[in-house]
Image 1: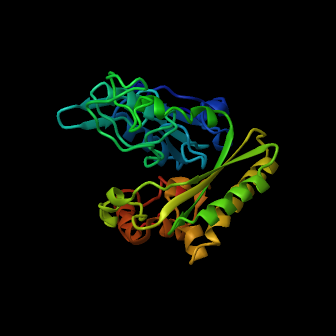
Image 2 (image 1 turned 45 degrees about the horizontal axis):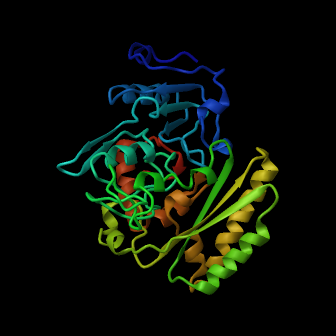
Length: 338
């Protein structure tokens, strides 16, 4: 398929139908790879509309690729991929206003290292080779500091974690080796209204039961304070999870890129989160209400999207009708225009 002439004139780089499938989700999750017809490496806000038009006119599927770490495949497509990771990957900090201006294709490593040069830090993913468009709450500490410490207790060039043992930007890379690029991954999330040591013990036992020789399981129970999160009104942002409940998740990982291995991984992930959900007062609510980034299925029904966005779903429907009535942007969460 020949790219739109206007796109060629804008000096974008393109791939053809012979584009290797692995490059479609380079360094990402193997089970999320799709063989794209065209990949547009946009450079600025003028390029992006041209790429969208290139997808809209022939009716090709479209995906936006940021940090390239979506287990659900939301950053891959068999049609057109608008790739932000090559050129729109910068981070610029205004130290006086304590604001960071971050490109959609940036990874957390870039943000951390840029911010620490100004004595600043922000919340974000604790696997820092992931993109800024993904998990944003999973951090070890929330900190803005101008007098950081390192393991020796001496002043350093950048902020460190609250214990003073590891510099902050390094702390957020400690999990990288546990989640290497090039494996298959599947997320499953749920919520827990009250932490229970008995439920945690039962879930850990379930992890041991369902872990297989070729499938490893990670269980995450988020226990950080929610006061700051809950200080923001529910209708201020799309996700509806602001309350007493905490997130839990299971992450399955495996190497064999086969349907059978994927099925075993998904079943194991569901089994672990279900072991906690069934101990809740409302098991069904626990299992269907989850932080959106912890849902690993490529296509989610409008009913499931309604659970994720809750009271904000009608507003999202109105925005969808105004800006995308043809549902060109339809990966992951299905929002029906209304």
